[in-house]
Length: 227
Image (cartoon, one colour):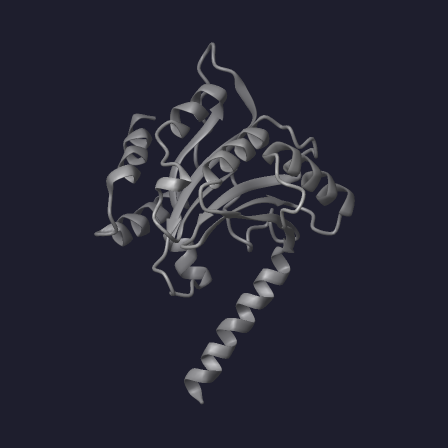
């Protein structure tokens, strides 16, 4: 576990130089099956094991599925309350991250990609936040997730914080987009957990819609290029 902690610490000080080579190397490593996370005696086991991912892309650069996958960097995995706080205490807060950075905390075995089998038929609740609110809201949301406060069984896949230039975006992903009872429950609990003002805009987007829009965008680019 100490190696992962060192990688986590590096996130606080590293720049983009040489990052691509590191990401590509680690992407190959994490394709191999990972062993179970050991929970030591005296630690408080969580219901699920989680993986923490980090990604960053150049502003204005449209990500393809391949480039997005290659930019995902696995920072660590945790299965107990103590392990979670060990990692979280070393993680930069959203207010300290550079623009176009994303942190993803997903159940072990689920990659933070629309195409993943667990995500394919699902969607996500999106909350857009003005600058200065993301750190508190992100912490409240992931604590609710790992603490099983949403009470929707195995529906929750993971959570994402996306740092952008003018706003920050948090989202929580679930498996079944077509179940309005489940998506409604997640929305209501998310509102309560985040203590959002009544006029806060929340949007639910299916991953299928996102995939179709992404495909359409890339197709238009290719047509423009060849015209």
